[in-house]
Image 1: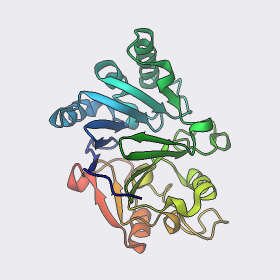
Image 2 (image 1 turned 90 degrees about the vertical axis):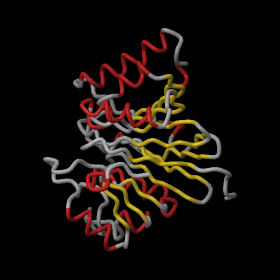
Image 3 (image 1 turned 180 degrees about the vertical axis):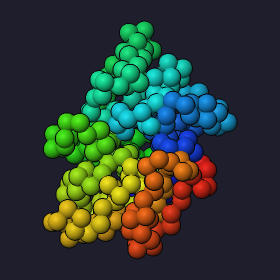
Image 4 (image 1 turned 135 degrees about the vertical axis):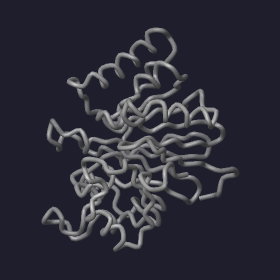
Length: 266
């Protein structure tokens, strides 16, 4: 690929236990997840410091509160041009319902085009979206019908972002079942420079060779990142990141960057 002029900035924002990723390219902002609602001020301040008032693409990987806690607020208070969300609904979550209501209100008010609100399913899977020279290929979820109906993590939206020859794989909370689908669908295309490590470094993601009793190769055999970014909160109750995941990353000589240690990572 040709190397574009300028830069694409990937900001893995420190919002405690959760995910919030901001991509800045050609003066346009792409926001992927928001973290918990209690971290809203930290997210707002971070965006304000970069002068972000308009979001070209707002992507929510899945409907758990540590990813969409401030999603309704973002829709209500920012100009948003496109929204991509997981096909997995979460009707028992008030935060999810508030998010969907905020989207519907914006559409009804003529502030958001209905066709610009997209589920990550059907023809969108495997297709690419461009913001300037940045390519965002929507890789997953490949086949959410294979997951348990109560599973919110595996139907995560998975994005391969490419700037020139540099690739960043953003996996939400995708776990082993989704990783196996991605391997089956894309194989060595998954190779990237930076991996947003799935599910905050949980042992349920970044599976090892033979972890499912069938696969001979683990996820990192295909992904082979130079850098693995883990977004998690210090002393979180889940014990993220798990030692098994850290050991797996280290076995592939991946440089591990953690928001609970370094703060926001750019």
